[in-house]
View 1: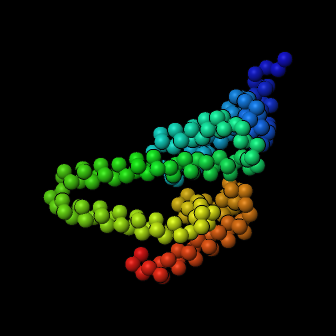
View 2: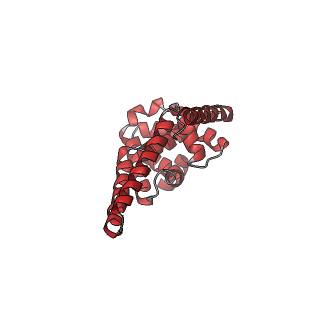
View 3: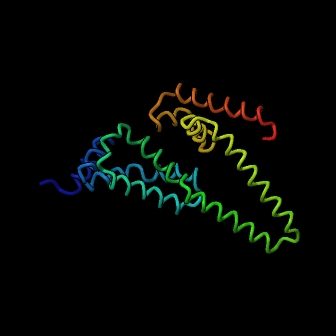
Length: 196
């Protein structure tokens, strides 16, 4: 009979795909091994999308719960590491995070409103900020999804092309190609709509 520590050691030596297969078979040790392998780096990655570490940690933990609950679909995943990063990003980009940000902005406006001698100017400033965010969002919405994801990882997360290629499981040339598409789309939108 193997001891618990030798079983844990055995799990740590398994590949991500092997661990995903064991999770599919409802092996809690495999889930713990994947959790220990990626939790810290996923939280570090998530900070790029959400400043509140508590929210990031909660969302990353949710990803592992989702992994356990969706065990039947794990056989479809061929590249577990990029999958985990993408799921964390998607979790952090969900409307709940956006709503929290919006509430924070609104609370800031309420706080400023209470102390500001020029309430009208504050309202105008807020409307201009919201208009600017909508314009940027409008430009980003025109970038194809994969190119947008790579653009955000490069420009917002400050990841190098090689790091992006490793996370997403694509070649560096593919990353360069998607960046070129994103930058060309942005350039075209800016030229087309000079007010941006």
